[in-house]
Length: 335
Image 1 (cartoon, rainbow, N blue to C red):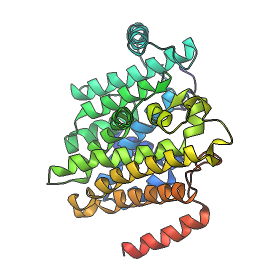
Image 2 (spheres, rainbow, N blue to C red):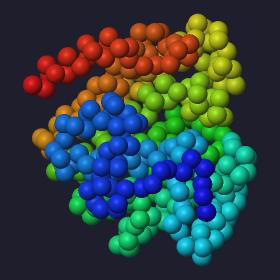
Image 3 (cartoon, one colour):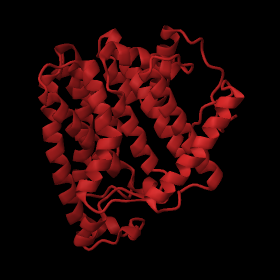
Image 4 (cartoon, helix red, strand yellow):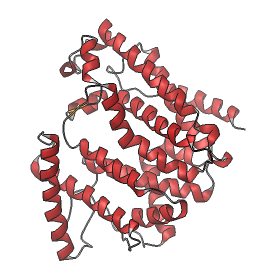
């Protein structure tokens, strides 16, 4: 069985090579995250790379940017996976009561790949051997830090939601989605960072929700073109906005949109303030990395506010000079 966008020849499946493979995925995918992770001690840093690589590839599968090469599977295992993926596709369609956003063949490939991720997590849970370097590194990480595999399975649940048109009505529904695709990652990472106060788990959830709510603002147009709307539609309606008009070039200038955005930013700031309470609860050697990420996303949210909510005319990002200035300010904070 060969899936599209198959990766090149994999490295030898030693633990060290597996971690290097995960680091390279991180390097190619996000320089911001890579730089923040470098502040972690070596053992924690490489484990965070493993978690990031897992999350990155799951997301890439859903977006159609990557699919695993499954030629290593036996014919029997391949047929079994194909059969179960077809059953899973039917179950999802019944559950969602929607047509998938991709064509039948492409959709089935994505469902199959996500099922392959689930199978590998089960193998790790049962202490069975794994072949792919992401899972070699992840298995070592899970064993070293006693990570709850259910959080990673919930992440896949959230990514499966994205295979179908999304239409969340309330902020509570948006929060539930953010928990599945982001808070779960935070709950995994704090086991690597280390903490003693159990309140850290609550604030790790808030960190995930804060980061994902900012990501939603950054990708409104791109997501809309894929049939995904993560802004709460009932809230949009309350402000006089039809969610089917998110591609209207005049929308950013309308008072209704500016009012909605003030409301959205206000709610996001509440999650941010709760998220910040996580930092002092983490082990001393792990505080800088999440502090940087939280600060960067806070700056991006401030940029949305400075634009009076216009996150549609151009993608929401920090400009080059702002990044330079921000980097110097961070250096001053953590000398």
